[in-house]
Image 1 (cartoon, rainbow, N blue to C red):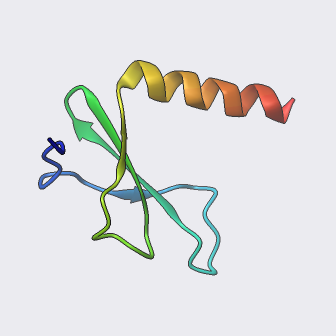
Image 2 (image 1 turned 30 degrees about the horizontal axis):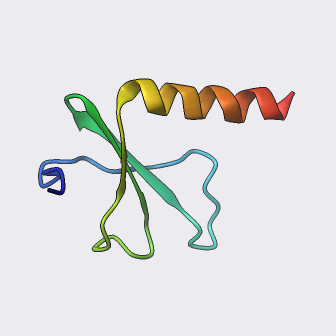
Amino acid sequence: MAPDLRDARWRKSSFSGDAGECVEVASNIPGLIGVRDSKTPTDPPLTFTPVEWSAFLRGIRQAEI
């Protein structure tokens, strides 16, 4: 069963460019982080638990060093 994201407040990544290549994140749903492509907002988003999302971000940050 897909999570209910009707009340999700989506925000664009601060790293998104002006060419329409935007990632949007919704973090206002308790216990869930939603991620979607702004070009296809009606497609099902990816969903993560807060622990999974933190691990993902940590991995990205470590790769930047």
